[in-house]
Length: 628
Image 1 (cartoon, helix red, strand yellow):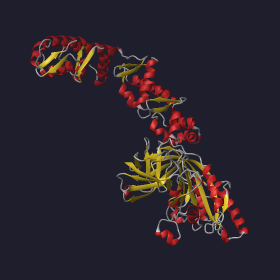
Image 2: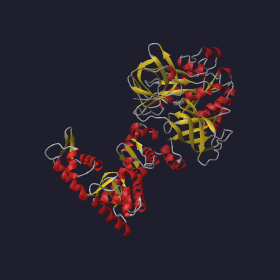
Image 3: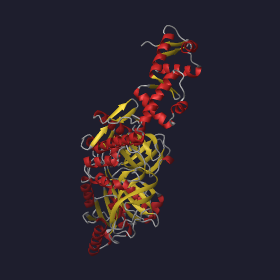
Image 4: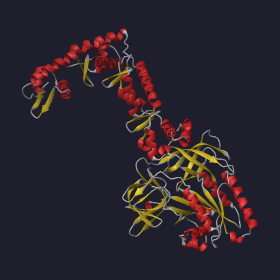
């Protein structure tokens, strides 16, 4: 599927953008009566344009007046080719410069300069305006490579040559990958009788078809596509780069508005913090300060954000650098998205850049080297850098297209190419993270063994919990499995230990061990509680608990309840007696009590333990011994 092409007008108010679109397309893009009465575009207008191909091609007509720059920014999203309109009788003006600046910040690198109203000037004046325009482009864009067309929207002079220029520009637009996650920033929403709520926008990526399930973000409302149109023509499917109207099922017009994003496929989410590369052009008069509150324009959304600079100092005009943007409400973003920053007050453009990370952690300053590779490296390098930046938590398959900004089909191929990336289930990790996790497990066990020298093992769950802040459960498990295969650690039931570790007991503790076993053996099926045992053998509860755990690991003791411990010999004899009592017919607690000579305090916990361990099973008539 060949992606569509979107042209966007730009330029100072009253330089004839709307008249030019009308001359090229025959469409009146001023939709509101106020616009037509004042001759001033205040909102976005759209029109199809014929470039001699079957590719969907349209023009977005944006307002030029300073009061409506917000609408202009919304219309600039998704533009492939800028049509910079300058009145030949006036030359470049303030909005001309700002629109050029915005196009640079949004990464629009293809454009045509249109000197309109040439019927009002002579050739000498036109040459002066042409030269002034090239100087303005050099100053703002850093080049003057865009072709210049001299036309008159009213007389038609130069329009045929301009049409040819549009065709050539459209043919040079890079095709967008259709095999990607669908996204369309919403720039308009309204109700249509018989169709319900309709949202419009430029499809940034992927494709959408009638009947598809889609979601409106940031609200998260799921819906279904009822119908699709491209410039008034019904479609069953629409690809990237098209001006599209989408009729939605079960959505109120009040729930969808400019700034929302219509998405499809897994992985889309909102972010409250963005890591980014930002540029402050040299033409800007003010610096960007650490902690400054700014207006962030991303897609069709405007949101307030707080700037955090890399070195906590200001970012000066003519410079660029890494920043984090703490957004005051969630935004829908993808790595490599372009954005514009404007001052909170007075509202003027300060700079812009590209998103490099979604919701980076507080220690984001350590990741900027990875961010650089994510933004500028080829697919395998960008993917590896994004996975490294994710650390021990990793990146799920569905997160990769957003975290790299690469089309789904490309990132999927790169993720399966191996290299420095390992895959555990459906999550990718940097190979170095598995090595780091192995070291962390060994370090954790070393410290635990030193801290609890009387214990032969450390509970597996304690290890997992202790490392869970830095590493995912799957990565921890993979590291333990490798260490076990290489005989670095031993997993013993619910515990784990370094292979070279054994419990370290003093002579006094060895004596206490013997006293514990002797005391419990003598007590039989009615042993003392841990509190009573602690006093009987003369040690504190912490030491006693460690020694009891050690005896259980050795198999010398069994724990019936938190308060009842039996020696292995006593427990084995109890099993024999209970099996004999319940061997042929169901036995009641009284039957067991006669043979064991126990009070209910010890009998009932013992019988329940025998049920749990499979010695007996309960029936309505009593307990029966199981066949073993």
